[in-house]
Amino acid sequence: MCLSHTAKFDSARSDAFSAKLLEAVNGSAIMLMTSIGHRTGLFDAMEDGIALTSSELAQRAELSERYVREWLGAMATGGIVTFDPATKRYALPKEHAAWLTRSASPQNLSTTAQWIGVLGAVEDQVVEAFHHGRGVPYSAFNRFRDVMAEESSQTTVSALDQHIVPLVPDLQERLERGIRVVDVGCGSGWALIHLAKRFPRSKFVGLDLLDEHISAANDRAASEGLTNLEFKKMDVTHWNEPGAYDLVLTFDAVHDQARPDLVLANIRKALKGDGVYLMQDIKASTPVEKNMENPLAPFIYTISCMHCMSVSLAGGGMGLGAAWGKELAQQMLADAGFKQVEVCELPHDMLNYYYVCKP
Image (cartoon, rainbow, N blue to C red):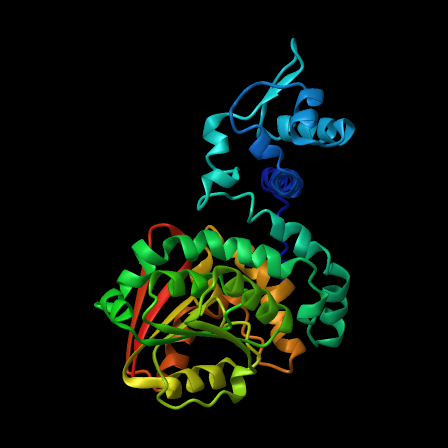
């Protein structure tokens, strides 16, 4: 005898799920408008909390009133700004400004909102990749370098002095005396430029695969007049400088490498015997089930699918993705030859782990 296992349709559960989806639709729209508010300077123009009409705000921000008015409609109905129907004036509460304006950095979440537009722009290519299985190249991502540099300035550069450098005992003293440091996958070089300015006796090298990153980093270093810093184009899967550095840094750069296993092995080889490797990478677990309570897990998997995993696959790589996780990271570090690995968390950074690794 056959028994039916068809579950009874739960109307309450269905209604709750539809409400969740509707909330997500509105949330996505608000994030897109938040990105626009950041890029146009509208949040900064409202930072003082003065209630303004759409015309007054447009004049203050030097923007089109019609576009400002529609943007304010989204912000008011989305609960980002307040609206007085009697006066037709809008205001940004100081409690909201604390998370949305440039002066709120490093907790300015409007910079993060920019990822919605950046990732959405490659949706067609990612959909195609679902069929052919290959990746979407870095060159397809418009504004990625600029947004990544802005995010890095908030989460990494601003925390270097008080939070990140102190993770390694005596590191500040060694940097002050003078050591050799390399940043692998340095991007536009913001972190290394900050360190080179603060520790003039140390020598710094930045390595990155992309011409546009190296060019931007060199331009900024030159404008700062730094002589203890150089940036070089390098495919770090073929990097070979045995025992050359006292400190190796990577900031969210390992998981999207084509061959992170080779990169980690080359990092280990580049370290002196008493050297330290400090790796900042995404705070996640390797098994999906361990990420169910991670409040940023949907964002992490999304940015991984749309960028991190895909650019690795585009280079014929492993496609680890942003959610490669602490467990796999620790195993790969051990396989690369690191015998001591301490995983640290910082209160200001809910997105990353910090791995302090020694040979």
